[in-house]
Amino acid sequence: MSRDQLQEEEHENKETDTNKNRTVDRPGRQFYIPSQIVDEFGEKGRDHLGKPFRAQFLLALTAGSFMTFGAIFSILLASGVETKGLYYLMSGLGFAAGYAMVFISGAVLFTEINVLLPSYLFNKAGLMKSNIYKFWISTYVGNLLGAFMVAGLIQLSASLSDSFYVELSMFLDHKMKFMENGVLGWFEILVSGILANWLIGMAAFLTTAARDITGKFLGTMLPVILFVAGNFQHSAANMGYFSMGFLANNQYTWYEYIFFNLLPASIGNLIGGGILVSLLFSYAYKEDIQTSLGKS
Image (cartoon, rainbow, N blue to C red; front, top):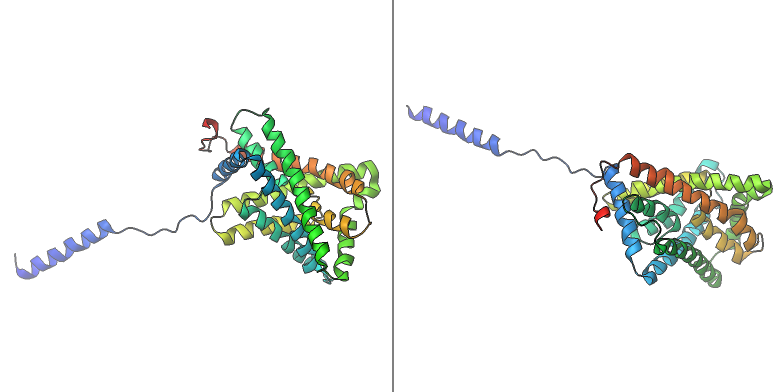
């Protein structure tokens, strides 16, 4: 075999070895698939339930505080905006800030655990354990106290202008309009609450799906903007608005806020988050979920 033939054969062998060792770089998937999200819901629910009571309550207090910050920001951003579409967009973006702080900080929001705990309970026996209901109730109370705490601090700071309180009154009227319809209005709030936490449940779904901080912000914003624009009644969000309204003026009484909004909205939120998000997806993806929940 000639020298040229040997060199050509050697070159071909090198090319073959290179092709064998070549790997194709494929970008990693930038989100979790639905069965992984539901599994993550259950894990988060278990983690929250396993915390000491003081930690549960402090995280609930923090989440309620973020709701008032979100309510204030939504009013400030929308103030003076005349175009309806832009008005809804700005108020939704403002409130999304509160939810982003909740989701990313690990704070415990009543309406979020309506999604997380049913996912956990669906995969594990022990529905009648009293600590579950104690956690649910303490979260609600902690959210309410946290919302009032921030509202009180803001009032003491005298930071907001008179125009803010004019806009706040309009927000409160918008949320309390159902009161005019009596029993029918109570039922309307309940249905509106179902829609609200269906959307917030999907915000938690999208936020959990994202694997980077930008994706988590976007996943939070879109459903929040929709529920704010639709005036769907979300008990945790309303705690932020009502705490400011209760301390700032006598437009409505605490009785009216609780019994003609928060109570029916909370019932609706339980249904919307627990059934239409958590249990629906848990059942749909039950065979796909690879989880250790049932073994813990």
